[in-house]
Length: 262
Image 1 (cartoon, rainbow, N blue to C red):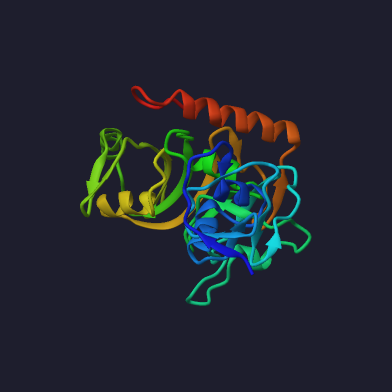
Image 2 (image 1 turned 45 degrees about the horizontal axis):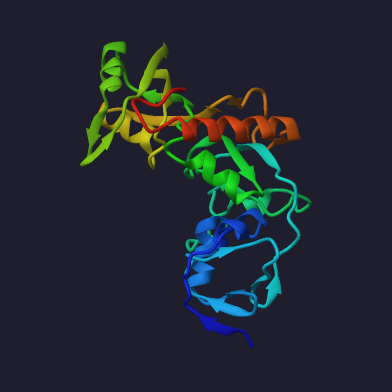
């Protein structure tokens, strides 16, 4: 039986939760929850804090089982359909994307989320470290959405969002929005945002007094949805993954001063 320890002595290496996430077991947050629950041991000693560094020669186990051999980093573009949620388990019993993805895929985690009624581009990976880099605010990837809403909106109203806006006590940063066209009683718009706060586009439209009828994410940074059909996915090549990783790391490291670049 593994012994318990709360030793958080500083040592070389990487945080154990990061190593677990990279092994494809789940997100770093999930790994930290397993640690807090006493399910993780390092060299036979149960740990209860994620503030532990491990080296390649250390033996990390979860529920007594060693971590799987690290897979190569894989990244998928997925066209999430409406009516699915992006968490692995849902207390309300709603269907998740992981229930409909092919079982032949590795264990994946989503990079960010799309709500139940939103479709479009979602990134999936087996590498928790890559997911964390691309999710960091410092990375600042531009996320572009196409919106169909009921009612009329002027370009002047949309331009006002460039200065940011407060909705229901939440402050949102600058938003680029463009009126594409009007069709009967509806309008088509594009929104470009960087923060990715929960339901941000929908709340912006509510602030304008308009109801979103259809919302699709079409771009994340340099990655485009393109012609990928609903429910379809495409795996990025190793070269594409490496380029994205380098770009994300460069943006993170360059972020401390001034506005974030695209």
